[in-house]
Image (cartoon, rainbow, N blue to C red):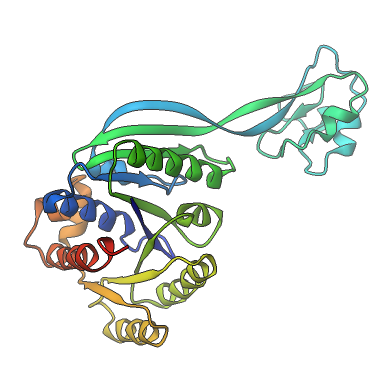
Length: 305
């Protein structure tokens, strides 16, 4: 069983569109029934929008704990506000709803329990907090594991780990050969969770100043964790000089650029219709370029990993 994770140093490069297209092409190319899909971009999960899967299971994701004050026994002494390092305890004078007791700002609370231990009347306890939703769905191209982190919540890396764990279990239990992971953008904790255990990373970049800069950052991250990278340049014909700069940089670093995808209005049109570009416009220039990327991946890398 192999893990291919699709990454981008920045958002908006076409990572999810490419992931969906690869899933479609793989299913057409004899991989149907052998693939598990995972959307690890839990802060902005949208792979399901184009795959249009059937939801099978949904469950709460517990991201951490938050302090709760029992106002009935609270003596309004202010000890909790004094010991809180995160300014999460609001006094009656700080309240916007004319409250007469101390209360907790759940967005500021880190669940450190300092107030719990210091409260003289034992009026504070920690309560589990639902931070998001985890989903398992079935798509035309294989099972899809995805999740949604609620706004303002933390532990996105933990939720990514849950998504990948369930995808791996499915692959092992059903003897599937490939997990395709739509990773999050950037280089933060969610990305580190997404590339954990990956056999290969495919980076989608674009010919722009920020695209080149963020490509360099994500390559450093992959090098640190020992994950071999490949590069695809999207919208490659918009700034040819920048595309050449990316190709020269990758050649210097001995990183293969396995494809260049031209700017093609077929992609946004397919997205507007919640469709996969290679499925609805297979002869579009972008679709033909993506097909070459898949052929290169499947013949040269996925079978040999």
